[in-house]
Length: 208
Image 1 (spheres, one colour):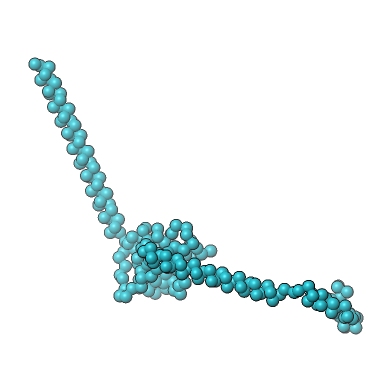
Image 2 (tube, helix red, strand yellow; image 1 turned 90 degrees about the vertical axis):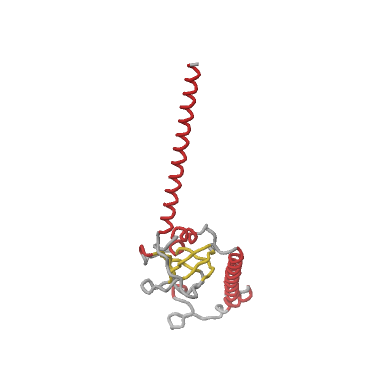
């Protein structure tokens, strides 16, 4: 009888310990989750919320950081932001470093190494101090938007390359002599009389 009581006591103690361990594990997990949530919320709150202009320009284009595609790049903004290069653009643009969601925007502008880094972006108010427009939002374009832009770039660059080849071909044709033309060109020198002393040279003296 005594052994049975001891066994029951041990069993009760084991269950109590298991319950304590389980409760502690749940509490620890919840605490970590709360910490992660707070940390994530804090990260989301970091950065400046740039105002969106009325009738803001929302465009789809190939955009990269200027320092990644420009030789001998000179950083003119310092810690204020990073200049970006937008294909076929007639103004200067930059990504502010203090903007909210900067890390996500910078990752999109970094690209994956493709020839054209197609993104969708919103342009903010012109900054007179920097002489450039800030990109206040950068996002992934829809498949239709991306495909349409890629097609436009491919056709534009193909036309440019074909035009360069045509110009090279025309220049080569203009400077090419046939064998008969070359013979006629050199035959004209046979009838020339050269006299350096009488100031009637046909070739420099060291060729005579």
